[in-house]
Image (cartoon, rainbow, N blue to C red; front, side):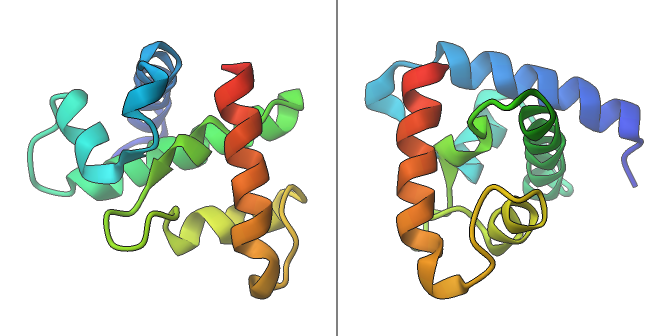
Length: 115
């Protein structure tokens, strides 16, 4: 299991990479982000997800849009379920799953504009 320090360091790298990425390359998939960070198996996607969760908590504390909104699943073009669960727990997105996609799109626009 990665330590919280490892997740914090990776979260800092994730933030720098997403802030510097050309808008045309966003959203980025979890796999693309893992590759851009030079992560190697095992648990690359899990490590990315943990770092994104750290960034979400930081963004919520500072009143910033979630930079994690710029990362999506290759499967459906939306963040993983953990993003929605944590965003709802942090009071940023509605708890009702039926409203997640619309609320996510707004969070994505804000994150893209304010990075």
